[in-house]
Length: 182
Image (spheres, rainbow, N blue to C red):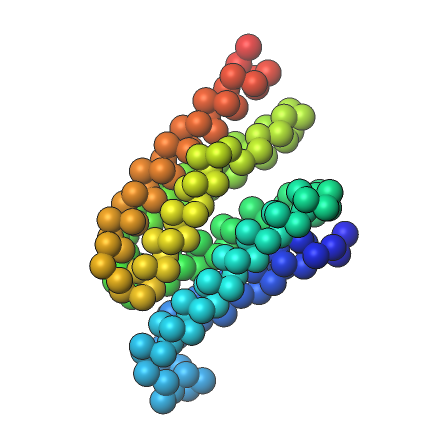
């Protein structure tokens, strides 16, 4: 149960609210005296570390046959918490379009519901290649937005398009394999 991949996913779960706190509580007494630029750097560092745990937990789980039911729950939950923390924090800082964030989060919630329905039918809708690309582009977009680098807005909207397309793939695969509609 508590193997290295699950511990890494759990660390990601813990880092997401810390990053969110740094983004949205800039005027708290706890952070007083720290310039906003340094808060951005700290949030970006936490985000990079958390994103690295996403890569390593999957790699270790597959390579060393440590895939567990807990990991199948923790990993996507940690991913969603991390991207939610980043995108909502950036939206509140007015660095990310509310529409882009709405589209991304709506897709994530919808697909999570679809996966629950698939599991209830005994289906396993694993992450597709496009779903993995979508996650990487979302993470790169969050990093660029955190650092306010050029091209951040373009990356955000690219992430939106990939997010919607990978959502379409999940829906298509679900209906092709579902017993509800045959």
